Length: 171
Image 1 (cartoon, rainbow, N blue to C red):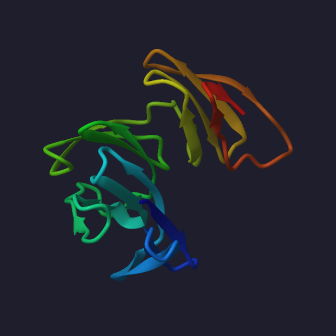
Image 2 (cartoon, rainbow, N blue to C red; image 1 turned 30 degrees about the vertical axis):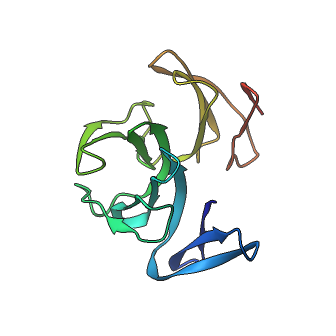
C-alpha cells in the first residue's frame, strides 16, 4: 500500500498503489493545485499537503480523501511530518503548523527559521523527532537539535532544492 503525489505545474494528482495489479492508480476526482508531500500517520491514515493551503486526509488507505480546513488558503505547504495521530505542516514562509483533531484545527508558529525577507523554505528532513536539516532558496542551511533552528552556513553559487536522510544521517 502507498500514496504518491505528482504535479504537472498547474494541478496535483494522487495515486494509490494497487497490490493486486502491482501498479499505481490515479485517484479520480482529485485535481487540485500542486500537491507537494504525503505522510502516513497509521496503517490506513495519511495526509497530503500542497499549494493554496491544500490539506487532504484519508482514513482508508487512499480510497477516499477529505479536505481538511486550513486557516491560510494562500499558503504553499511543502512538507508534512508524522507526530501520530497528528501532523506538523511546514510552509514556504518558514511557518510551522501543528494539527489537532485529526487536522480540523491548526496552531501556527511564525517563521521558525528566522528567514530574511524573500527567503523561502525549499525542503527539510528529520532524522529523529527533534533533529533535522532545512534548506532555503537563498542556499542557507538550518539545523535543529532539539526544537530551535540555527542557520549553520550558506553554500554558493549552487541551488539547494532537496535534503534527505539515511538511517539517522542527513545526506
